[in-house]
Length: 282
Figure 1 (cartoon, helix red, strand yellow):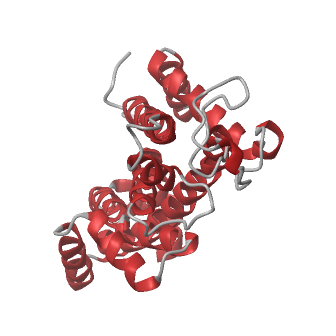
Figure 2: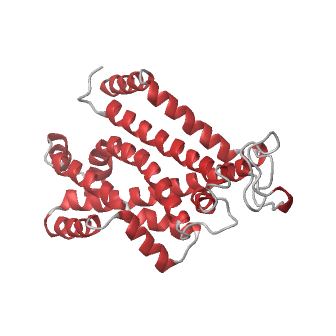
C-alpha cells in the first residue's frame, strides 16, 4: 500500500511539472528520430553532391548543406543515433561499475572501503573530459572506445552515491532482521538493500545521459571521437567552425541539436530527483 502511495505521489509530481513534460516529449521525439531515421531522412547522410556545396537553408535542403554538399538535416538525424547509443552504453557501463564498487565499499567497509574510496579520490582529482581524452588517445578513436572511455571515467559518482546509501542502510532494523533470519550476503544486498538505491541511480543515469552526449560531442569535435564520414554532432561542429562566417548553418544547427538533447535530459533528471525525494511535499 505504501509503495502504491509513493508511486502515485511520484507520478502526480511529474504530471504537474510542465518542464518535465516538455523535456520528456523532446526525449521521446529524439528517440523516435533515431529509430526511424531511414524513413524520415530526406537524403543519404554520406551522399556527396559537389554541385550543392554550402547551400543555405531552402525548401530543398531545410537546414542547408555542408562543404561536401551533404544535407545537414539528414546528418543531424543520423547523428542522433550516435549520441543516444553512446549515452545509453556509457551510462550502462558507468552505472554497473559504480554500483558494484559502491556496494562493496558500503557493505564491507574497512580496508575494502578504504581502497575503493582512494581510487575514487584519485579519479575525482582529474577532470573527466581529460581522462576520457587520455583513454581514447591510448585505445584509439572508435565508437566502442568512446563508449568505454566515458563509462570508465564516470563510474565514481555512482559509487559514492551507492556507498552512502549502503552505509545508512546496513544498520537498519530490516537488514539486521534479515541477517538474524539467516539470509546470505547476496540476498541481503540484492533483495533488501540495493532496491533502496534505485531512485538516486535513476536520477544519476538520466543526468549522465546529458553528460555522455556532451563528452562524445567534445571528443568528436577534437577529432578523437567518431570518425568521418559517420555523422556526429560534434564532428559537424568541428567541420563548421572553420567556415562559420561563410556558412553559419553548418555548425549552428548541430549545436542546437546538442543543446536541446542535453537540456532535455538535465531537466528530466532534475524533475525525477524532486519527484523521487520523499522529503518533497506537493
